[in-house]
Length: 95
Image 1 (cartoon, rainbow, N blue to C red):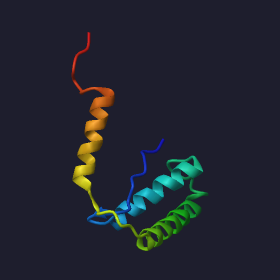
Image 2 (cartoon, rainbow, N blue to C red; image 1 turned 135 degrees about the vertical axis):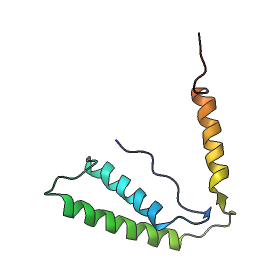
Image 3 (cartoon, one colour; image 1 turned 180 degrees about the vertical axis):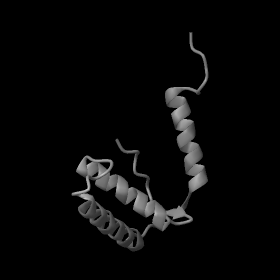
Image 4 (cartoon, one colour; image 1 turned 30 degrees about the vertical axis):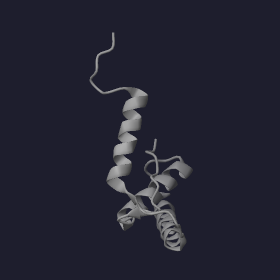
């Protein structure tokens, strides 16, 4: 139903407003059990997304760490390598 929500804290460059809102949408979809709200629930869904977005921004702005910021491209490459190891390379024929 939903893609995984990504870690947003301690990256360089920092999480964008779009990334934070996308995570909020995924969270609200997961909690509500609906990928798209009905017309009757659209206002409540949108308000929940706004509230979660604001809470997430507040949380990210408040968190502190001593660890150096992670690089998005490096982390994406690591994830891709883990997936290739776990699931094998795409397009490879296995008899």
